[in-house]
Amino acid sequence: MNRNSAPRVAVQILTWNRVDELVPCLESFACIDYPNYEVIVLDNGSEDETVPTVKRDFPWVTLIENGRNLGFCKGNNVGLRYCLERGFDYVLLLNSDTKVLPGLLTELVQVMESDPRIAIAGAKNLLLENPAYMWGQYGEVTWGPLLVRTVGRFEPDQNRGDPPKDVDWIICNGCMMSRAALEKVGLFDEEFWQCNEDVDWSYRARRAGFRVVYVDRAAILHKGGSSADLGHKKVFSYGYFIGRNAFTFARKYANPFQKAKLFCMLWIGVLGRIAFFALDNTKNAALGQRYFVRGILDGLRGRLSEDHILVDWKVPGRSFRQDRRARIRRWLGV
Image 1: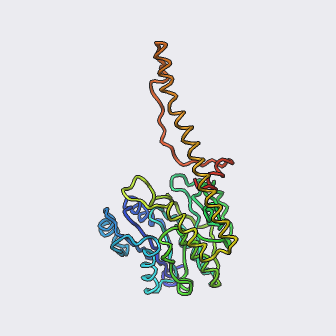
Image 2: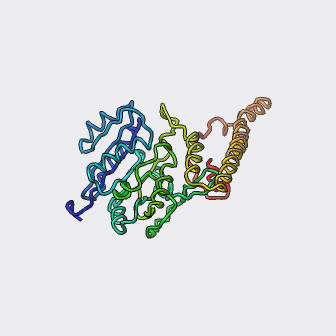
């Protein structure tokens, strides 16, 4: 495929105060062999070095400065309008806490070109910290306890390369949207601001007669949870938006039974998470005192336990356990 015959693809990356993640994301494009694409970075009013870094180190990137934090939906809509005005055939939405892998654009374009009814095609999200596991594949609407669930969440990647399949909704961390669908379906619903806007857009696309497709052969590396990372100065309140936007979505699509189920399941989820964290914290609090108690006993006995002089201190990471307890945790959204 040469540049003249390849469809024009815009790669759109929205970012906000994440220069430490955006730089490796942009550097990862060195592996892309697709001949006809343009990378567009949309900056949502970053206060770090994002803007000067992109201007200085990545002159091949088109930078659009939104000037302030417009949120995910409104911020991305600025870029989508730009792409439509300039005649791109497809737009790939990409999070800044990702890295692209070879074949990503080629695989997604081939799927999109195979059927004009495909509005959106989603790539597999592999965990950046451990690519043997998946961050997620695609989503299903369950109406509780968190409205939706992400299929493949923290599961081992089987690397099966299954053929494209129609699904409920596509994760917008790494997805390709067609120009025709954007013109007919419209842009993101800005009432969502962030969270579940991809669920809404997928639903609107199907209502307009389009297909929503997951592509296992296309993949990205995804860190996940970056905008809620407590290591940053400012973070998004995901809990607020997950709760709010569940009913924003339900008002548009749910029948009375689904609304009632969602309401009940959300409260079951709240109580379940409170109970889980209460028990978990109690267990950790009790275990956290074991060295202190041992010290009291050794002090009373006048002895020194050499195996307690030093302690292995492990920073907790993500758990990839696949047992029943782990499945219940993911169901509750813990």
